[in-house]
Image (tube, rainbow, N blue to C red):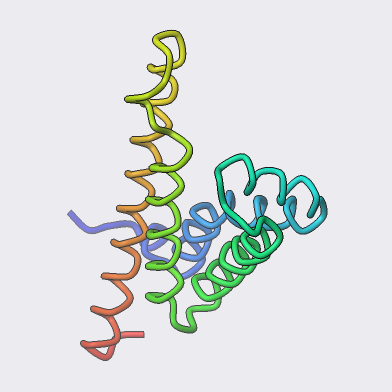
Length: 136
């Protein structure tokens, strides 16, 4: 069965990458616009100095998203977001420590983040495979 051309178009690919980057672009911009809030979030998760952690997260979220969306070192941006997402899941969604009434939602968030990290690894794999085989 032949795939309709619309599903394999560069526009659909870019829109899918934009959807994957959406939370990181939004998160980076919100942190940038409310740097005090970003610092408070970093301190809440035990990251000190909070101002440096907040700046690093903003740079990672926006910079890695830019790499993914422009295609320049897409694999690197995708792997950075994979690592960041997995670390965030381990830091913020420790369902095994959550009270019983919060465990279900925290567990769902944890596994959603792990799934997203896997999607980023897949993006990197596709990009590196295309580069290796000269398809761009």
